[in-house]
Image (cartoon, rainbow, N blue to C red; front, side, top):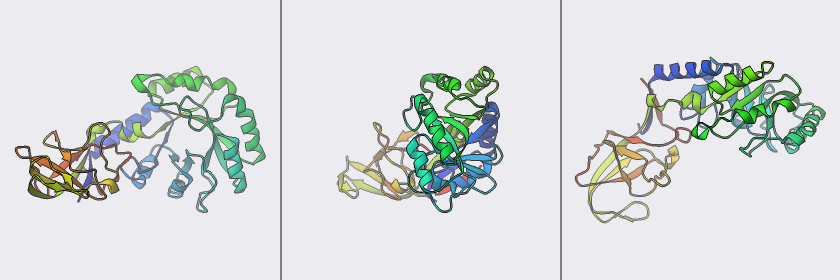
Length: 316
């Protein structure tokens, strides 16, 4: 085995259930690399929490089990896969998004994305009526509203970005929100009792407590060197020591940490890279006198799980 994700299964399941219950009605997000677990594993868990699941793109929607309704978070663009489920819920945030769906004669359900200070997708308040009219003319069934404020840096309360939209939404359709804490979603429900607020959750749900998981890479080879060069680009070595080859590289999504360097640790010490991780392996340099891993042992890998693709998941 090379890159391994080890997870305390029961602790992880307890965290997922508790987090979902604290937020009430939730829309689990299962997109990209499945937050390091892979989408199939998270689809199975999402089915215990809701009958809908959010995915990143129309292409990911084709993988969703038929028992779940896919909610696509990113506007479809100019191409729709022929395998897109008819019951999928798509997202529109502009007249162009509606026109793209209309060009494909797609007449399913949509969420209207509302503008936030994130400044990504989303319709502005003064353009909302025109977008609603365009949806009606295109035979799109608007089933809810969607808003995605920025991350809660320094515990900043982003719920105000949600509440300021309420006076412009003249119906009782559900409002899907991201990056809102459990306390803030409860407050919104109390402030607007006639509204249904759905907490859209990905990172906080699946990765909210990293103490229950560990990412490691297997040591594949160790050999002594006395200076010289090594690697694809003949990088100069700083002196005597050992080259350590580990089975994790760019193909796994492993890369250098900006401003820090190597993502690899052994014996609680960062181990320097000879060169940036490449494809399925990385070259490390351990100076003489430093803790040296043996072939078959593992080194810790410091990487966001939203980016990596582990070769295997070990449930403990």
